[in-house]
Length: 134
Image (cartoon, rainbow, N blue to C red):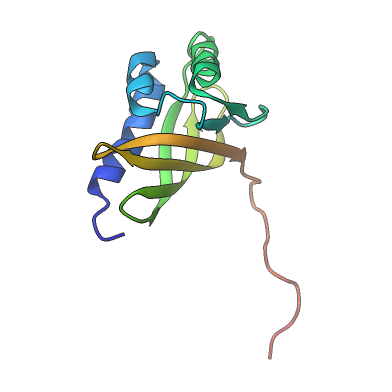
């Protein structure tokens, strides 16, 4: 991708709306159809905007809204479909980190979200093979 600024703005909006419990902002960002999907950490995958909206309403009504510090952000795709890899460092009473992929497509010239999947990161995971190299 040559120009990621609009995609970066759309991806950033997801976290702004999340932290603000802005369901209208989320509705404006997401494609409001059955093609969309969302997997919150520990949840089953949810399909369709109506059910995803309910999931955000449940999260937003919780005792504490998450705050995000994002890192390792990477943009991939083309002019019509793109995905963003991001590590979400959640701040607050339950500090944790998840790896997330946010998927977007262009609708009438605007990046709109069609998918989100997040899974917990294992702290201090050693990915070395253990094999000696010469």
